Length: 393
Image 1 (cartoon, helix red, strand yellow):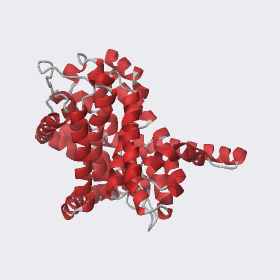
Image 2 (tube, one colour):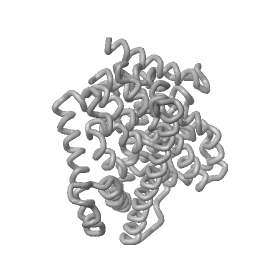
Image 3 (cartoon, one colour):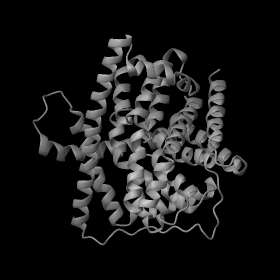
Image 4 (cartoon, one colour):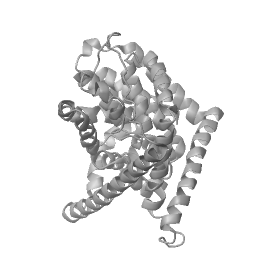
């Protein structure tokens, strides 16, 4: 029965993507089928084999070390501000982003990161049936973030046609940046974070290939990566330190606003209707949770967390998940955890449109016009990744 529901879920997701397709006749199903099979194989390796366990432990171990190093800096500045036995979210989860941002800056500066992004992007382009630009952009989004990625291709941003721009933005919304990954690993199991990162990479191409199918002319498939302005090493360090701190402050501010707003709305709904707003959202999203492989008895609770992520952001949803995870089965916890690891929410529309608009006003307006379709596609990517995991768990 588990596999039947998973297959049904897969058909529903692909069907919903096809429903929103710009050109159903142009959809190339061969690379889509290959990528779905690759997703299943990679999910199985990561979650069900000793090799996968070693890979995840190594990946998690690296971030565990990085968070310890980051803690040394945080403790030096904020030591003694917390009571014994307490771990304030801002200090332990958000501020380490500053240190990880610095490491990304160093790898960018010594040209290691661009080399990795180009190499993996080239390999991906051979699998996904899309261009080098789209493949590079997907990897770059995962490395440097959904806003910063557009700076790396700003040389050609103004010349990119609308259909290719949609794919670039869809990749940016479906993936998550490395600077945030460490924060996620403090909130949900690292193995689900790593699995989601891999699955979303392919899922973004699968859904974009259906919603927005096109063929890239080899003569037009040119990748022009913007070289960063020449800076001294310490100028670069200062810039990335401030960028990381800005991200931590912005996420912290959004959490304060969204968590407070959700608490207020829940209170009003409970007062008027005798049920919380999240519970109402849970009923709306319960069918989606069910086709993702969540047992019906847990579908309402899971659906509420999924809706919270869509309406607010993944951090708020992960906090909510932490409060109810003891009541969830390991299978449901794994499926929902994978669903949460992406930037697919309403605020991301503004972030991506704003980032593009800052580099090209015309293209920023284009992104704003297809913003809802962008979110629709990115949400389907998250659902698809969760369904793939449901085959394995």
